[in-house]
Image 1 (spheres, helix red, strand yellow):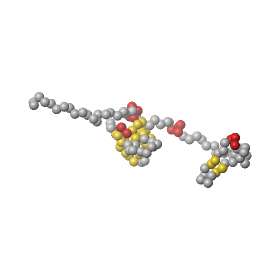
Image 2 (cartoon, one colour; image 1 turned 45 degrees about the vertical axis):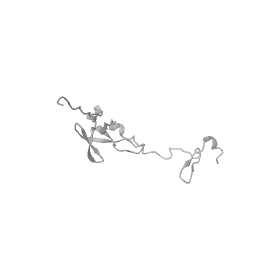
Image 3 (cartoon, helix red, strand yellow; image 1 turned 180 degrees about the vertical axis):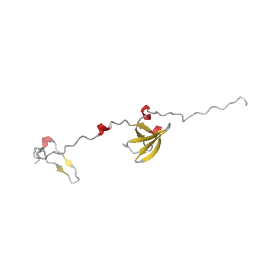
Image 4 (cartoon, rainbow, N blue to C red; image 1 turned 135 degrees about the horizontal axis):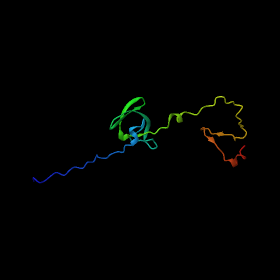
Length: 129
């Protein structure tokens, strides 16, 4: 009996998750939603601004609240520079006389009672009057 030794237990929770290398320096992240969702829902929310980092958690700003999440639920968001994201300039001095549109060239649009627009084939528009 003195020579019997117990068998070592198996370690089921030793799975390691992937941490993206740019996660340490990214300013924004995407946060994975950890719940069952209906089909065609996006699995990540964001981009969210990173406020603080530790070895295992990240503190992010979600809708104005500080939330601490685990590293296995996030992935880095690669955003474009702000100059590219600015909207194109709008021309304000567009006169209505410069735009020539004729209603005669366009076929009339038919609207059903439910509000749907009916489009007839081009070859049948000569027969519809």
